[in-house]
Length: 233
Image (cartoon, rainbow, N blue to C red; front, side, top):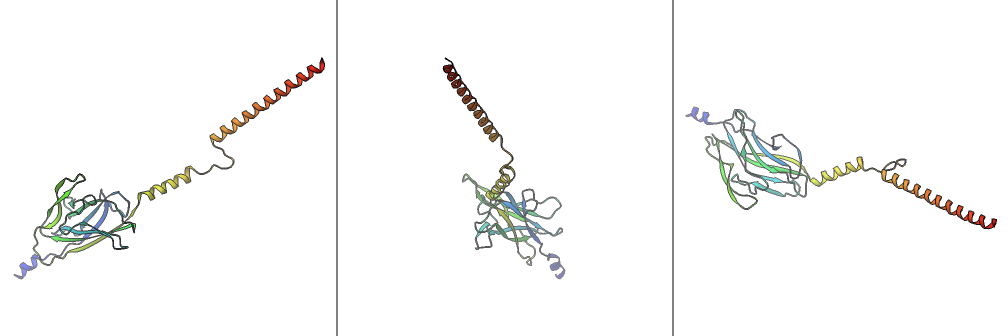
């Protein structure tokens, strides 16, 4: 009996949470609206466990503002913020779960923290069926990894994982780009340089001055000739 009990005892897997782009590459900063994902990975390569994720929240860490993203059943609370948790495990690798979302932030902080409860299960985790509404109000059932199928060990412990990311407002990036453009392309011209518009204006002034000068000379010449003719007769 002792040998049978020992054979059923397996250490719980080590799980990490990563914030990535949709390609799966880790990132540490993003702009509001960027397509991102939370990825949950089992570090141990030879573990017999699979995992499911529930009670996933986002919080700002400043004034305790938080949003429940995945509820206690493993279902998304608002699919417009975060989608269902899917398995993206490649063949021959330990399990990887992914929760897609678009980058968002709290008004009080640029840093968004995520915390989730991860539960191991043996031999596999069966997805839970979640009823979700799309943008048009149409309900549909979506599978999300949020239910345990079966355990063979009572020594399995749930694990809390955390991660954070810095999120910037888009208008800050736009403003910075505008400032750089002003500095590089819209600086005032040096004093010894003039724009094409200024050159054209100066040229027109010179032509006008010459025309006025010629007109004055012609008028004075005509008056002189008239005066000369009168004196002659």
